[in-house]
Image (cartoon, rainbow, N blue to C red):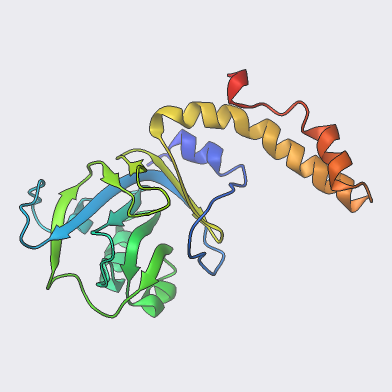
Length: 211
């Protein structure tokens, strides 16, 4: 299957991203989101899936999983990574806890998460919705929503989400910003101060107002 052209373009550039718990390791992932939301067991699911959600994740996508804020249970484990890798999923991002760290590493499958746990979700939670909009469980970003098809990127610094409808604008801004940073790095290596190098090369960088 041909790679998504937007994903191909994003691979050409470094991406500055944020996460409260940076991941260790060289993994770098990018792709459109397939979302899963866990809810308490006493709540009625919005999505009726045939089988397990992991069997429905499309290849070349990023699996994004969230659950109730403060959940101590792991929302994701090693067997899910094993199936996701076989399906050609690009990686998994969990807005919560995971388990089976060594198994993910042994599989060479990239997983990003806020924390770890040893307890599975089955006792308290079940999947309430798949491939629908989900809200980030974050006190710092309480209004952030990840929608199916939004573009997710992750590397050692953390994770970022770009809404699908803004992706073309983001791509239009990236070349001049990346070029400016590369030129500033060269100037610094040759002894120029950061202030002087920045003034020299960032004056013409494209911003949102240029679109």
